[in-house]
Length: 149
Image (tube, rainbow, N blue to C red; front, side):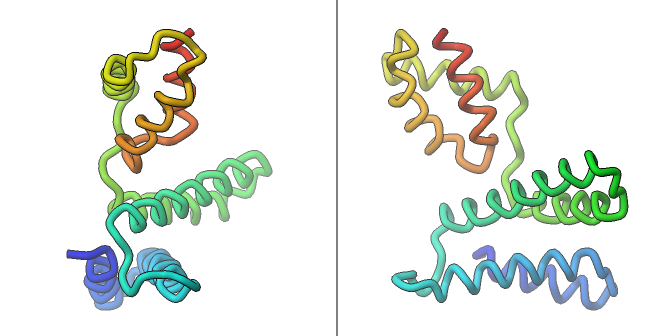
């Protein structure tokens, strides 16, 4: 089932349950999907990779906002962002733990044949594709740099 279909099912359930947080978040996801679909040069439907990228971007935006609101002691706004992150994360694949991420990156380094920090680009290209949606890009980068150093 496509992301759009899943979101529509969840949206219907949220309407029945009168869940305002879920409604707000699901409508934002639906709007983002529509924007992507109607963008110039876009295909009629989004690929699974595009859907994953879209959700990851939305989650990251909210995490950044959450961090800012927390620093400014705006707990009301921070709570809204946290609630939305939880709903968006339902549609994302499970995130890798630090140990799992390190094991995956070690395997990628061996596969690519990287030996020094000069091979960072090769490893990051492969790692970003393989681990898309399962780990944050910044965390992947930090792990690759640490293992190649």
